[in-house]
Length: 326
Image (cartoon, rainbow, N blue to C red; front, side):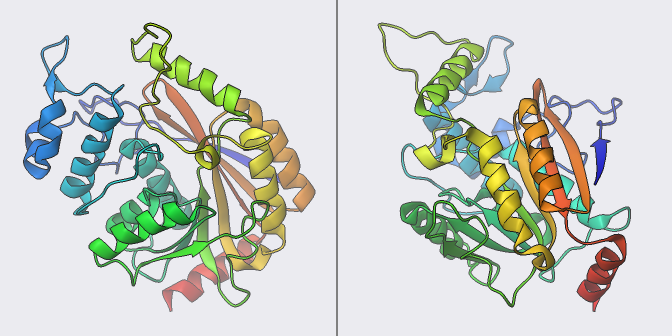
């Protein structure tokens, strides 16, 4: 097994605010709240001057974060009517876009990024927000299948897809098993260029609560009068934690991918904790993958990484890319 560590750093000559984001990420600079409010008037109610005299929002306020997402998706991707039910995960757009841009580099393999509907991507755990298919389709024209175990989440995602006329590019599927990842979603006669996943981060509700409290403190907030802090990005049970946390979830994903080895060029997952990597690598070695890439990502002080694996050798990878071009 080959483990290739890839680290991409932004051009330090660029006057950007969000250090570490991918060079193609449109969210690298400061938010232009004038344009954003013009796109979504709801956002205007949350914009105020911060301690530095700049327009900003209170990122500890989930309603403000949701309004910002709605405006960003409309301004930069032409997505209309985006919203999520209360308490569902409200994803930070810049980081989610980064995942997709790094996957585009992975597909390019040193050449041009493949665009258009010939590229098919499976998003495991698409959620109510449907964020990866929306950004990926608008950025590269790829087609997506999004799977989830939550019927209510899929219903909201379908509403967004229908509102933007993307039914021909984004298909949503219910995963009926809490243990399976690809089985029951991947048909025996179909293939994907990529799979992607943002797995549940925590191992228990208690760990999720502790993480919420840390984020609350990092945002400069305190717990007043014993009130429970509200997670600014929200999240349901299946979105925030699972037994064994992300390491166990990715381990199941790796094991399940082995049963569909020839049906995908690159399987991938976000890995938030560096401590999870040794266990992930052990699972990959056990499953017999032929190539692994660990792609480092950063947004300010937040560090994360993508682990990508394939069961195809280099000759098979080249044949796959040639078949896509035909």
